[in-house]
Amino acid sequence: MLSRVLITDDEERIIRNIRIIFDEMENIEVVKAQDVTSIVNFVEHERLHLIITDLRVPRMGRLEFLKHIKSRDPDLPVIVVTGDDSIETAVEAMKEGAFDYITKPFENGTLSIAVEKALMMRSLTMENRYLRKELESHYNFGNIIGNSPKILEVLLLAGDVSKTDSTVFIYGESGTGKELVARAIHFNSLRKSGPLITINCAALPENLLESELFGYEKGAFTGAEKSKKGRFELANGGTLFLDEISEMNPAVQAKVLRVVEEKELEQLGGTETIKADVRIICASNKNLEEYVKKGQFREDLYYRINVFPISIPPLRARPEDILHLARAFVEQYSAKMGKLSLKMSKSVEKILVSSKWEGNVRELKNCMERAVILCKGDLITEEHLPVALVRDSISGYENGKDKTVKMMDFNLPPEGISIDELEKHLVLQALKKK
Image 1 (spheres, one colour):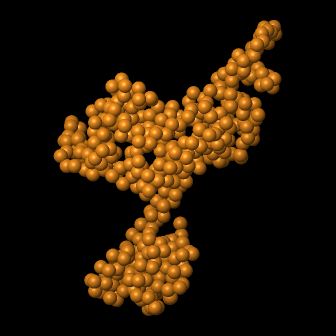
Image 2 (image 1 turned 135 degrees about the vertical axis):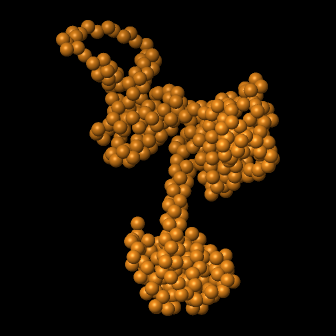
Image 3 (image 1 turned 30 degrees about the vertical axis):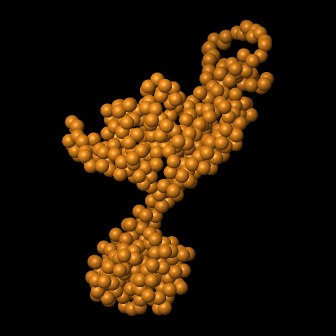
């Protein structure tokens, strides 16, 4: 990638010396400016990776100029090259955001090392900014697809609570998109610049869950050869998503309650109290009220985490969203696999709408990914769907009809027949009669 470096200095000799350094470096474009207007214009309208300046800018103080540049692009590194070797000036420049401070006369090696470090930092910062932007756009509320009243209610609730620091409890069957809603809440909250840490409480053995959540000191138990931060500490300043919290054992529940109430914790084997400024979002596919009645979940913790409940309906409860979701998944996977935009046949749409989708949105998503993989043309048909899905759809249709199925006699060819092909042929005939 080409890096653009802006040089501004009142000595043409210095500019020439600096240019010599960049002549030895690849993929560098050097531009120069002499006045405030042209410098600011570059910063605001051009993509720059580095500024090298002596800070002697007409009609503006040196530090004021640096403040002005950093206000336009806080992440843009500025290397100050100056004849003023006073420590006070250097300290003030660094306080105002200068990346490095080099006094004249300087050795080329000193400046080239500073330039390499600055360009590397700028590249990493821009990459991080791009990835965060992609992440935020992927998990915004616009990516939770559906127009049904039930899903719109979920979006309204999630939007309202995202601007607060309240604890959220998301209910819903497996595959309904609980984590997607949790991520959308985080990336639309005031904590979006902080970390989002997730942990599935059902995926870890009881003895590991506690150490993963709270961390441990070196020697806390056999095998603890070095200290490790827990998920609560890693999520400081951000959000911790506790998925399937119903699977958390009572001992861990008691420690989580302390974090929720007091915003502090202690590592395993440790004595130091650690502050945990964490927003907690929980999720479960179980009825936690029943768990409380049976004594399997602490009542006090339940009421502390159930501040703002959001219930996500199963896909079968919002059939009007099925085709919206299916088309979105087809478009997504078509683009990902480099295929032309595919369409679904009317019979496929009928099958999708009439299916039960016990696995909810996750099952539908997997189904459409498979269909896109198998489709060689531009139309997804029944043959691209799982046979069981098509069979169940036809079976449901037939069970709703009061008619007798007649046995048919036909001659079996010597070479035999394919049961799968016969089934698909019969399915197609049945669909045409709908």
